[in-house]
Image (cartoon, rainbow, N blue to C red; front, side):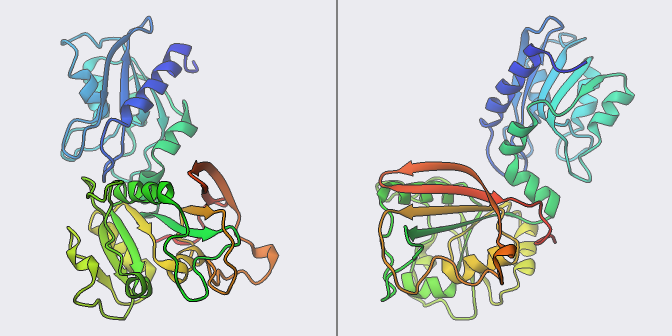
Length: 345
């Protein structure tokens, strides 16, 4: 039996509830419990590492036996493993849930298998409901889980003719305050921000996430510096709330593996044309943010350099996910058109 109208409506609600939870190592998940007639009995979401998962959070608001014969609508396949909390599949079975509807399969090697466990217990299970919306919600987490490395966003600002700086190297500011504020908001959502030593020495960035008044936002990405040159003792990054991390070489596989092992799930690359191009060329750019200002600069300092495209037949296709007008500037958000064939660790 396919999902009912009430279950689809509940899934949209569950997706909204998922956003109430923090973005961290664990996925954002929402859940809605429906009665046999389709009425909402309970709602819940995952509130962070070590707290009950969304299904258990919702069930905890019900009296014993109140979920008997009910339907659980969840944005992610219920887990089937014991970590800091017990298996959600077992909790649903114990509560007497008769039907489970979810959006996205859990790709985790340890946590997957919940759907099979539920079916073995006689629970009716429907998957793939609002799967596109569910995958969009979990895009960062799914990338990190599937590839075993952080999700990587590569950002740059450019003029309308594709330049990142004037001929003398000056680049502050190509874009306006609205675009810069958007960048800081996105920095704050990342676990780490990466630049090269060339950008460090040229611009002396603080690598912090700040509000429009310059105050630090509550969450700060860890600063990561790539390159062989030394960090000057007076560099602004030395005053960052987190100590910076150094990677001397350009081995992106090793760097991303080390960051992933240290709990980093989302990387924000702002390292200038050379570093940005390296991430794109090596197939590690899971998302691109191009801030385009309506100005013309000309000259040799382009926003990207060599991408390993010898002929137009090898161009790198992107799918535009969204566009946003920010003051006079335009933000284009795009992702690789092809399925990941490079950058796997």
